[in-house]
Length: 293
Ligand SMILES: C[S@@+](CC[C@H](N)C(=O)[O-])C[C@H]1O[C@@H](n2cnc3c(N)ncnc32)[C@H](O)[C@@H]1O
Picture 1 (cartoon, protein in one colour):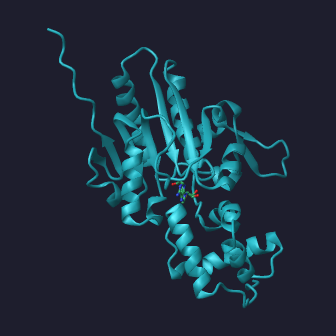
Picture 2 (tube, rainbow, N blue to C red):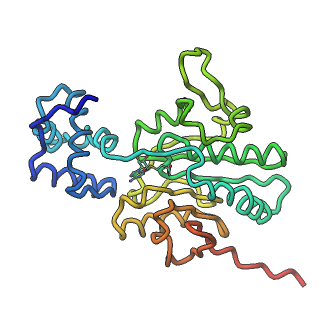
Picture 3 (cartoon, protein in one colour):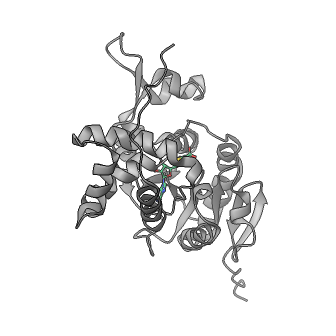
C-alpha cells in the first residue's frame, strides 16, 4: 500500500477563512475547519493544473482583482461533493411510480397528460436518468403519458458528465436488469467497461446550470415533482429554508417535493407543504371548483 506523501503546502488560517467565506456566500456550502484537509487536498489538484507554486499562490490569485470571478467556477468544482447513485433512496421512485404520477395525471384531466420533473442538484445525472427510466416504463405501458425532465447543478464539471451520460458498468448495478436492457447501451469496445444511456432516454432530459443560492430560478412554475436531495445538508438552516421556499414556488398545486433522507427537518414546517411520507412533501392542491349548478 502506498501512503500519501507528506506535504508542507497548506492554506494559512486567514486564507482558509477567506475561501470558506466565499464558498458559503456564493454557493451556500459550509466549510467548517474539520473540512480543511479535504479542501486543501482538492485545491492542490487545481494548483497543479494551473502550474502554480503552492496553495498560497492559489489564494493570492483567487483574491487579487477579478481573480475570483475567473476562478469561482473551478473553486466550486473543487469543493462540491458530487456523490450520487442510480436508484438512490429507492422509496422515492416507487412513490413517483405508484402515487405521484397516477395522482398528477388525474389532476391534469386531459387526454394526453404531460409531466414536468426537476432534479435540482442533479450531480452527474444518475438521479435524472433514474426518473427518466421510471417514467419511460410508465409511458411504454400508458402510451398517452408524456414527460420532460430538467436536471440542474452548480458544477459545470458534473453537468458535462451528465450530458455525456457514460458511466462505468459497476455504477449502474442498482438499475434493474430489464431497465438495463431497455435504457443502457454497452460500449462497442469490450475492454471498456462502460455503458451509455440510450439516445431516446437522453432526449427526455435536459441539463442546465443553476445555483440554488440565486434569488430566483428562471424555470417554469408548474413543475409536477421536484427532487432536491442530498444538497441542503451542506447549507445553513436559513439558506435551506430560503431554497425550499423558492423551489415550492415552482411546484404546481398538488405537486411533490422530495428531499434527501437526512434532510426531512428542512421540509417540516414550511408553509404550503404537507408531509405525506418520510422526506416527501406535497404542495397544497388548488381549491376545488364548485360544480356549475
Ligand atoms: C451529493 S450531490 C447529490 C446528487 C443527487 N441529488 C443525489 O441525491 O444523488 C450534491 C450536488 O449538489 C450540488 N450543489 C452544491 N451546492 C449547490 C448550489 N448552491 N446550487 C446547485 N447545486 C449545488 C453539487 O455540485 C452536487 O452535484
